[in-house]
Length: 172
Image (cartoon, rainbow, N blue to C red; front, side, top):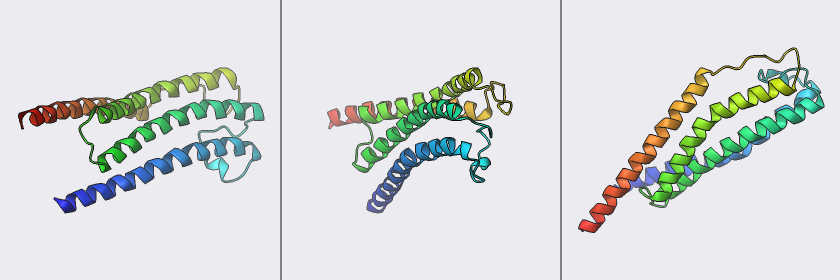
């Protein structure tokens, strides 16, 4: 039992570090790629989601649009960070844990909706020949919805576990 708890604590700590790293690196990397894209650096041309002929005004719009996505992703990662930190502290079945998983699930469902809004916004305001003029719902978007739904179901399962634990505490 002690060995299992030690492994759990170690894994939770590792995942907390990964979530913090993601919260810091993702926005910096994404914004950096947008702002350096107009410099025609060879490493930036590897990013296929950005048109090669971005102007400074286009870079600003891309920056704002993707910053909103980065904030949502950071919010989801922060919910998971708090979730793992609470588990490491011994808090597994609680209202806070249910809320964190529920919010992360809702965030995953919002990601494809935001992606579609971003596509429409970029289509309306950026008129570059290399910009693809389509709005699609990809398999990645469907995966996000499935993951979000799974997390929402998991939050309800944790809520049931909390109720069972509360009933058990009353019996003892």
